Length: 553
Image (cartoon, rainbow, N blue to C red; front, top):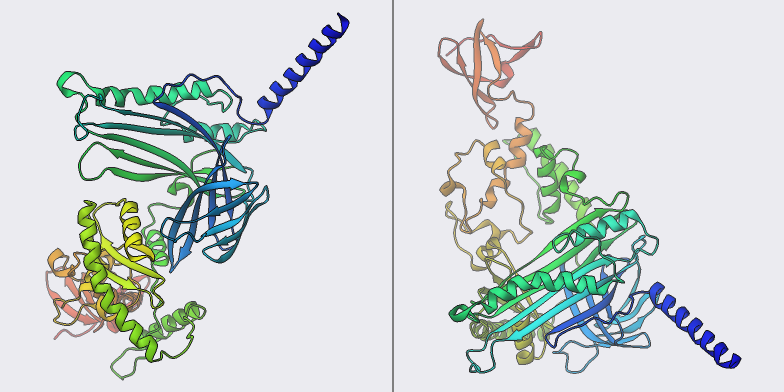
């Protein structure tokens, strides 16, 4: 009898230990009731970063070998991403894209320290970010259903709903992390969520789904009239010791050619848990000069054109300005000149001509596939890389387009890596070409540099009539040439009095009505309504007032 009691005590002790272990080591196991239409999945998400700013979002599915890797990298001064859906075996990941003919495109080992291996043949090393937020969990709830089975295949309608909650791990019970988690999921619930209470999370997500489902199922003749899909997914954009940035991708479809999708970004301060806005970063959001400076710094033009100016008719101010700007550009670009590998030989030129010819045919094929996939986009150009390692298609679209299926179709057809790049209307005008209102070839076609940011302020500084038809180019945007003389005008007007400044002209009060920076002439209007033109050097500053004493013509 004593032995039996002793065994029972031991079993109870082991049971308590296992229960405590499960409760402390992560997600508590609950007996959650799910219908055949429902699924509840839990993922551990890790954010890993490299020295050059590239990063990985690694999603590890609980109780499974499944792993999703979102690889964000920089190529040709643009941000690209690959998503790998594969398996992990004892820390080893071997993944390949569907169009890579069985060749592994991502191989390496995932450990507590990070990921080390190769991606597309390039050695990579990603480590945990230096942040108090090391990792997080995502709980994904999904519900799918098909309209009554007695309907024909063509008449069947599908309902798909995927919703998630995102929670940074908070083992230390930090009030700041609790505050961040609460705000991240504020669109779903105002309640504080606990990863160990999955039944509560499931009920919140499923209740949010009911309204959409009831609308889809409808009543009588309004039932099952369209396909419906709603998807939301979370990812980590950036983690540091002071900042945390996450994104929420959403997709909504209710019939038609395509749905609506986008991303919502949220950035948080780790010192107080508050969500950051642009007002928190800029010193003065109403400072137009500061905003324009930020815009200019973001879109700096990096060209190596010869800016030497000669001639006696050019003022010293302009010469000094150009010399200063040339020095600034050369200093800025000294490390950004592409290396010359070798002189192109006959084989290179022949391959270039073949690629140019084949790209025309590739554009025709791509246009046909765009029509087949019913995508709302306009193809502009196609381009084979010299080694034919990649085929690039450029297109324009009014909205963001989900072209993943098109990429797969093109990759299976051409058997090489495909890139679709969305460009703007200014890029379209450059690709097509044409003549401006001046009669010369478009500036964007002649100057093959990055586009400058053109603002209405440039037209105002040059005293150009603000007529939209006159200052807009072929692309419908402000003309590029507005930027050509903007710096010169700013430099020349720097020491000139502003329009509206009061002065004394031959002992009569007057006001400046207009000025010409190039000729240094000023138009003034006297108190007795006379219009007079004077030279800038005729103005003298006496006791803080502008005075001009000259004989009128």
